[in-house]
Amino acid sequence: MRLAALTDALAESVVRALRGTDDVFALSEVVDSPDDSGGLAAIRVLGMDAMAPHLLGGRRPSRADVELVLASVRMFPVLSLDRELPAIPKVRDWLTARALTSLGVAGVETVWPVEVGAGFGRQPGWVSWCAVMARLSTLALPGVYCPLHADARRFSADLERGVTRAMLRRDHRTAARLARWLAAGDGVRSELSLAALLRHLELVAAGDPRVALDVVVAGRMLEGCRR
Image (cartoon, rainbow, N blue to C red; front, side):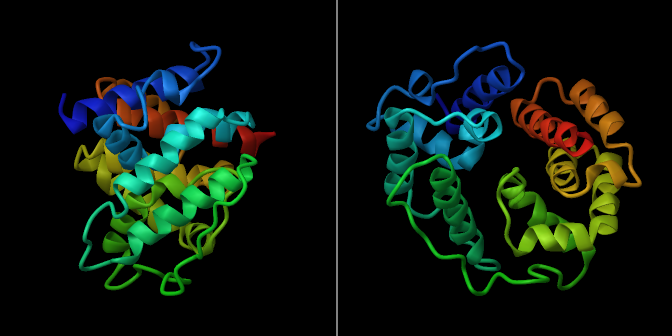
């Protein structure tokens, strides 16, 4: 099975768990073993979204699930050779360590890349910045905070412009990823109706599990903002 299909299958499992149709989510029931290179690659692509049911539900993962995440990092130590923004894989690895630590996993440490500070990716303008934020949307999770979260709040109007642009271009995946950042900030104060946007994305991108995952995560965070 191709990587895209494996990643979609994993995303579908996560979405079912987040929607409550799976009582107990276990990554180890989706990926066979730490030797399953295709499954580990899918985990690496999704990043910590693969553990979203644990992160959003406050449930500690099994040792088997933790080992799968760590094995994915060992097997695929760098997601891509990004010549323009080489810090992006470092940020994703930081998130992995930070999220696992928040779930009670000891001995997982990494340092936030010093080159990623306030205004990261802001040059040459809001369009390119939104593209960077979309690539790093897995950081838009409750309980995670870094300089990019401050930027998301400070430049929320640009995120809204990015969402609108993506919707006009029918780039639903980018729209959902940017919506996550808005939801992770003060989503209820957004000029956009995030709840309506998420409902619309569910309808128009019903066949894309990756969009569905971003929509469900954003919806859960938006519910948290309203409480």
